[in-house]
Length: 181
Image (tube, rainbow, N blue to C red; front, side, top):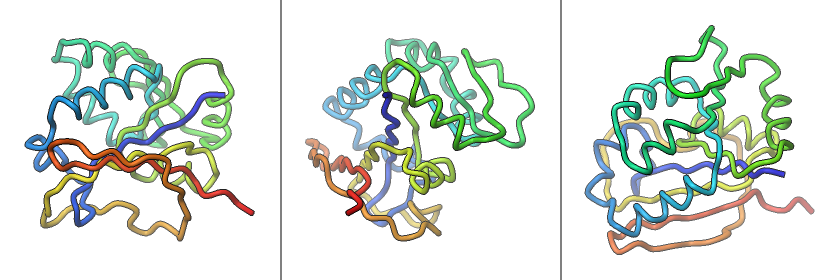
């Protein structure tokens, strides 16, 4: 069974919105290696509409090993408003029976399925026990304003899988859902 892994950048005060405005100063060689290893361990992206539209504007014009991987990956886009995929790589829309369709994707052979950002899609997966791991990149900066991680989320217990401190001071906290006993 494939794993669904969420990777999210957050400030010390929990802001996740617009990481391009506050995270780049902390992206060192070790962060690049972690991000690359994470991406190359996946063969599909699972994206909400907002992330998909933003990525579709940013990534196609880039060309290096990382960008080429993202651009060529299968993309599964969860949206009830899009009627067809944007012209960016192979993409499949999931607009109905979202939980069932994602559960079916997990059952298919392949590598990990990667989600960037923690929005409504990640919340839905957490609520339905479909999220296998959440990697929170805590960037050592305090940012005023913006959406915060897990706003409006019900109490959900997690277990720490790994904590990795990068030379920049960024800490990557990997969690899974806590065992239900």
